[in-house]
Amino acid sequence: MKTLAYLVVLMGITLFVQPMETQASDYLGDICFTGSSSQSTSTFTLRLGISSVGGGHYALHGLIATPTSLGAAVNGSLEMRSDGSIVASLSYASKDDTHMWGRTMRLYFGSEGNIYHNIGAYKEFGQPGTTGYYDNGTITLTPCQ
Image (cartoon, rainbow, N blue to C red; front, side, top):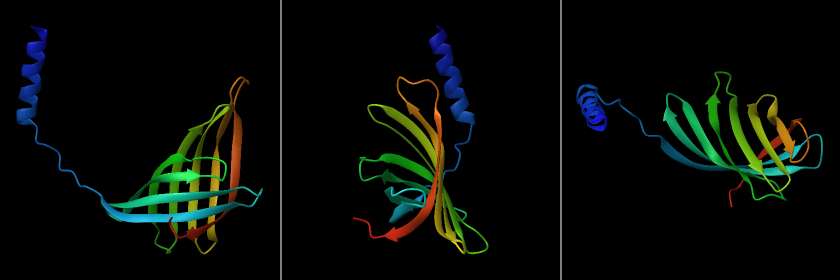
């Protein structure tokens, strides 16, 4: 009986509540980068799909990979600033047999150059606690393959 009452209430709500207007994003294409650390010899590749979500805001979804990894799913956003620079914020996490990590990366394209800052936490399984992580370097536009 309670199930029937819940269904009646739910149907009543859906009849009187106007559906929210939604806006689909427009897929603009993929863009690819190579990053080079200023603190080590490590590199990464980044392939991002860009979608316009309206109002000058852009959603980013893709993959970040290193020469020794298959990669991790990435998501974030991109904004064009009034000074002509572009900033993006990306988040990703990954795991292998012995470690897990989560990171946030900031990309900047502008008068200071094309640079990234990457900060996060790193956990080695079987060991207590986590370790902080920071890296920065340059990022270069490359053809997508």
